[in-house]
Length: 338
Image (cartoon, rainbow, N blue to C red):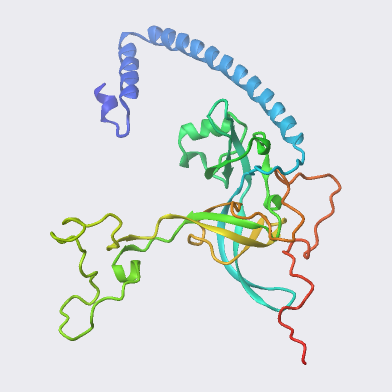
C-alpha cells in the first residue's frame, strides 16, 4: 500500500489493488496465478457477453435508423407548422453585388454537419423537440456521459448540441442530416447568438449617457452617472428602483436578431449568406431558424422544404440565380429621363 500511494496520480482503488497483488506475491506465486486467472476468466466472459449484446443492439438500431432516415418525405405546410433550425458557425462578413450593381453586406455562416441526435416527444418529455449536434469533437474533450449519448445512437461525436422546439408534423428520425438547402433564398430567419463581451463598462459606453460637464466647476465627475434617485422624500421611498441604468458588465449575453433575409446559399460548401449583421464574434455558434414574425416576403409563392430538404437521385445542381434571393425585374437604380 505504501509503494502504491507513493506514485503520483494513483487513485485509492489502484492503491488497494496494488496492495492486494503485493500481498499475494508474499504468500506465493501459485496463489497469485490462481487468483488472477480466476478474475480474468470472470471479467473476460462478462465483457464478451456485454460486447455481443451491445453489438447486436447497435447493429439492429443502426439498421432501423437507416430505414427511418431513408423514409423521410416532403410534407405540406400547416398553419401551425414549425420546423427545426440549423447550428452554424459565424465565418465573418463580406460584401456582395447583386445583378443591379448594388453592394450589400452579408454575414457568412457555415453549417457544420448538422445531425439529429435525439427526438423528444410530448408523451415522454412533455413537448416536441429535436436535439441537433454540429461540428466535430475529440473524445477526450467531452464527458463520458456525452460520449455514451452519441455512441448509443450511432452518431459521431459533436462539438455543439442545441435543441429546437418543433411541431409534431415536423419530427425527424435520429440520424437525419440537415444541410444548407434546409433554408430557401429570400426567406426570413431568426439568428440567435452570444454578443461580444466588453467587460465592465460605464454608463456612457453601456447606456449612451451624455456625461457631466467637461469644465465649469466639474471635478472628477465627467463620466459619472449622476444622481441615482431614491431620496428619502421621493416617490421611490428612499430606494433605487429595479432596472436603473448603472455601470456593469456589458455584452456576453444571448441575443436574437429577428427577420433577417437569406441572400444566398452555397450547397457545395454548406454556407449561408445572411443580409446584415448577426450577434456574436467570428467563430461563435449561432442558432438559425425560420422567423416567427414572417416566413417569406409577400408575393413569394414558394416556401422552404418541409420538414427538411430531401435529396432525390438524379437531381440536377441548382444554378447560381436559383441559389440567390429574387431581385425583381425592374432596375431600382435606373430613373428614366423625362
